[in-house]
Image (cartoon, rainbow, N blue to C red; front, side, top):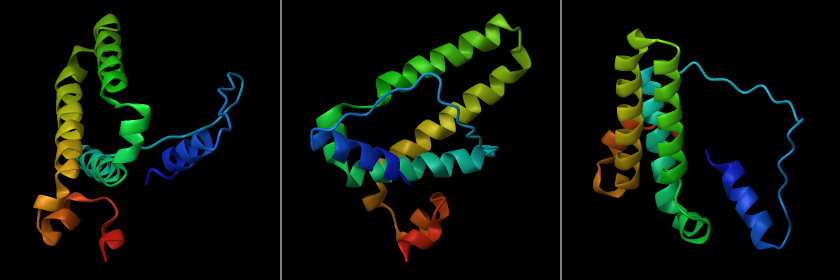
Length: 124
């Protein structure tokens, strides 16, 4: 979890560059349930807590997250997908809660951590 971010940061710190290639094609998809998304974001919170140098060096991700949430909500409104709005709030609320819990994982019991984590075996 987060190995791409970790590797990219190390590459940049060594003086190399990363490039955005607009014509690159990648298929990347997940069909997570709300609970799986919460667990994924818990793990991301743990990663950010344990690798705090990433946020200190490159900045926090919250600004981009807020931009994404706004654009997603405007998309739903533009396409009159009003029936998706409750799911939008539930999913994004659970992601936020999972992330915040992950950032505070050291205050939780191991049993709780394993329930909240998508990668339970990592904790063994």
